Image (cartoon, rainbow, N blue to C red; front, top):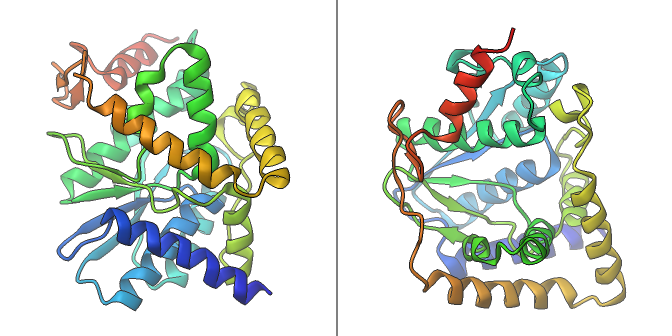
Length: 287
């Protein structure tokens, strides 16, 4: 049963890679690993695709260590994921980039938001500086469905223009690929178990450690998506196809916030100072 599921899962992911040309000869694809089931599944599927299709490209798994009490355990799981696939792992340490999470946690803003700023910034800058052509993430169908509904309710529908399997490179903004675009979170967990890939649970994140709590709103939405999917087995696929059509329509509209370079670090931003540099400056002022 597990073998059949594994093959069906890989077929879905491989079809996504083929249809949207996510992997090409000459690529240097960096895969950000958190130790979780989603990024681990993305790494495994990409490695199998490259091997089975004989693609002349390189995969580079990497991990950002946040220097928190559990970070060593998470890094060990990430190393096991990479070793299982015979790939060398690159580890970056947050302290080397001017960030102290203990100070960040004392800022008058949700730590979940700060963590997102840090990850987005470093996951774009670090791979690009090492010669990456694309960044692969473990975002899956359930994530995008939740993001879509939250954007719709929040009046930010234009953001959904980025909900596609492939976001091309835009200046210093590294191109992104989402090989798990048409599979869900529960499927990723089952896939890891089917292939013997270790992973950590989601509740070992900085949010829990510093008392911010996991994003309960997102968890509630994910439960809703799973509830509908169990009763309407075609829901996820139909929803993702609708999101793709919406993204195509929205992407045809002119961008009202063109990117420019941050005055301090030179990274892409829509403001004079990027969110990361503002965060670094703010945490330095924390006593």
